[in-house]
Amino acid sequence: MNKILEIDMKNMVAIVQPGLINMDLQRAVEAVGLFYPPDPASQDYSTIGGNVSENAGGMRAAKYGITKDYVMATRAVLPNGDIIKAGKRTIKDVAGYNISGILIASEGTLAVLSEITLRLIPKPKMTKTAMGIFPTVNEAMEAVYKTMASGITPVAMEFLDNLTIRAVEQVHSKGLPVDAGALLVTDVDGNLEDDLDFQLAQIKKVFTENGCCEFRIAKDDKEAADIWFCTS
Ligand SMILES: Cc1cc2nc3c(=O)[nH]c(=O)nc-3n(C[C@H](O)[C@H](O)[C@H](O)COP(=O)(O)OP(=O)(O)OC[C@H]3O[C@@H](n4cnc5c(N)ncnc54)[C@H](O)[C@@H]3O)c2cc1C
Image (cartoon, rainbow, N blue to C red; front, side):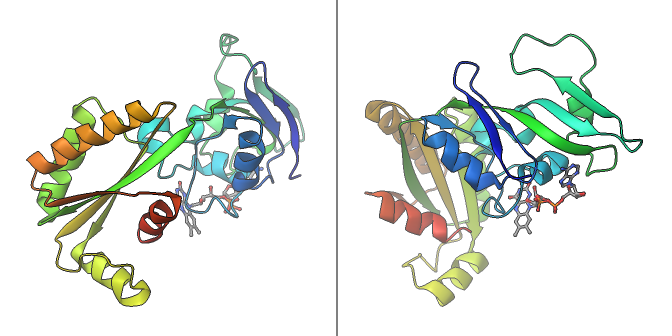
């Protein structure tokens, strides 16, 4: 039960079987210009059925939310064998109890999910990655919430303390600043280069006002992948 049954471009939903691997769904919808944002760290092997049953979220949760924000409808088998269908593929079709909402995160205790309809969104055209180096953890933490409060919503904002920085550097030698108190790694996305540059300029401003001593923007995808590799 690992199939994509349908990608409905008009309603921007995917109807899938529960055994589908999260990353297989992401790749399939991105191939047609759409985007399924929930990205748990287990995305390469965890299933949509498992993600829904755990309400999984990942790095992109800050901007795009978690699994529950994408479940439009479910088909499930109850313990007595009855099959239920809850929800619809259209946004405004909301009459009745939110049964899918009860099934999400129920860890298989209520029913076995047999089909899931997931909301998709248009794929942002570009992403940029940056890293801020901070003298202390406290300054980095101040910078996180002040960035969110500044009106910029980064896709992700990941944190490494000094112990983690040194541990990663010891094993992988990625050139991380081993004397830094903390690192913040952030992604922004969108459709216009100018918009991404504006978001990064704002983040840099907030970071600098909160003690950031160096702000690096990845110059290409390889450098961005290298930076993210250090956090995972
Ligand atoms: C290395 C690692 C990293 C992780 N990172 C994250 C993360 O970043 N974010 C996050 O939120 N979680 C994370 N998790 C937890 C994991 O991603 C979630 O538990 C995942 O969504 C489970 O998917 P699975 O396919 O492995 O499900 P399983 O582990 O097989 O099942 C999980 C639960 O869902 C139930 N279930 C599965 N399929 C169905 C179905 N069809 N109907 C009803 N119930 C069902 C099972 O009975 C079980 O209770 C991580 C786990 C690991 C091991």
